[in-house]
Length: 113
Length: 115
Image: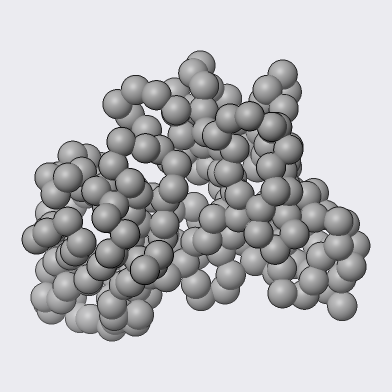
């Protein structure tokens, strides 16, 4: 299995809703990432988990809450989002201790109404 | 710190023509270099990467890139493009040592292949 699987593919949520994005990989990668991407822009790093511990938080608002329940799974919990949070949310993973070999999921297209 | 400049934001080209997408970078340390492609409404896919060794790197879908250390460039080329190559292309770099190995991205080049 050489994929990063993200669910759901599309999500529409109201500003008072709570929802979660899910990311799963079974490649044994020990670093996992959340990125946010606006249309025609490069991805922006949000969070990095290394060996299941949060190692980087790029000053992301607290309405985004990451969770890494185990080495294969990464969640992003969403609460009280704003319309400007609408974007493509990408998950990525790579083998621990190496810079190369990032694998990206196909993303969750989030719309906040 | 590192930075990446993709010199063309949009590149229109006719089908079966050659194409070059330009990428220059700045870094005080040695880096790894990457090209990613993003097809409409999809995630990012690695096209090719330079880690070390031969400066000419071949990737998927007939793409290749050449690492030029003196000019700090990593231009992407394809001798004959197809309609299906229409996509957004991102160049990225990452330090190859140290604790901070985040990917640093260029702003992207939108390749439009016309019939």
